[in-house]
Image (cartoon, rainbow, N blue to C red; front, side, top):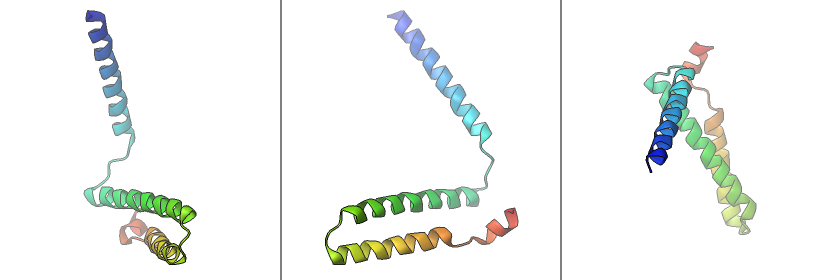
Length: 88
């Protein structure tokens, strides 16, 4: 029984060390930059979900609604952010 707990502890330590390495490897972002990254990830997930629904949709009005939503999400993804010009 004690060996099981020891191996769990080692696993936890390895996992924590890997998480710390990943955290340090990522560039430090401001709160605004993190919010933009979160928004971008959210838009990408929405886009994937819309595309999935669009593939299986058969109702023409629903397909049109999904296509409109897809166009809107893609426009938001392509929209430039004022701070992006400063960082390049």
